[in-house]
Amino acid sequence: MIMQHKPLLGTLAALCLSACASIPNSAEEAALRERPDQPRMHAELISSMLAQGRNYAAMAHIEELEREGRTDKDQLRLLRASAQYQLEELEAAENNYRMLTETDYAGQAWHGLGLIAAQRNLREAVTYFNRAVSARPTDPQIRNDLGYTLMLAGRLAEARHHLATATELVTDDAQSQNNLVLSFLLEAQQDRARRLARSFRISDADFRQLEAESRVIQRLMAQRADEFEQPLAASAAAKEKSHDRKDPAQRQSIPGLYSNTR
Image 1 (cartoon, rainbow, N blue to C red):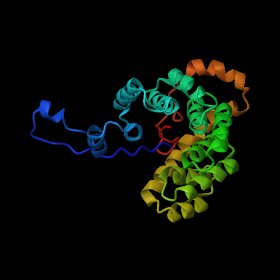
Image 2 (image 1 turned 120 degrees about the vertical axis):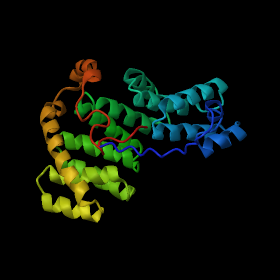
Image 3 (image 1 turned 90 degrees about the horizontal axis):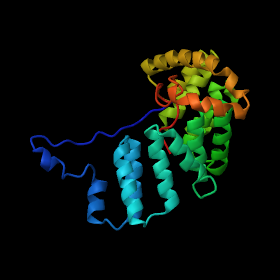
């Protein structure tokens, strides 16, 4: 499931609009204005913007770095693909991710391709996520997303391997913890799921929410059951329909789902 954590930004009241426009949105942006010659800091700021969902602002800063020409082109392409994915410009994002699969950012690129493929074909998504795991075996987001996709495909034992790995790589990651609990709920192992939830300090109210979500996921699993056996060539036809698809596997419909972005 996707859980987006959006930091609250401070607001300044009782100031005119023109004054507000001149105030940086964060300490990082203020520092960047003082030291604009640091491309690495600028790229980190863009990543922070993407994590906050400030995708249009991130695109503007990407364009600025491209204009300056002082930042690694592959890194900028990855940032642009991530922003395009967030903005649901999926064809452009997919093209940029594919151009990165033979670079130092191959793991992130395969992960991005997996996120896009998950909207149309689970087998294709698992293929991409496995390549991402091979390139970045200690990345908890990739492990979570591979685990969730395997869960949708009904391959719960395999899913748990990657979800458990993710929970141990980052011990306070709610995404992978929720998904691991869900994997037991989907097999009607209520007692084991509850014990695990307590070990993760998931509240009773949140556990009840996970139980409700498991029923939604069961319906989704039934709807998408044939995709894992579907030939990869068939996913090309599904690609044309993926933009109109409005089920909970797309992006952020269920808390926890897939990770935010790459």
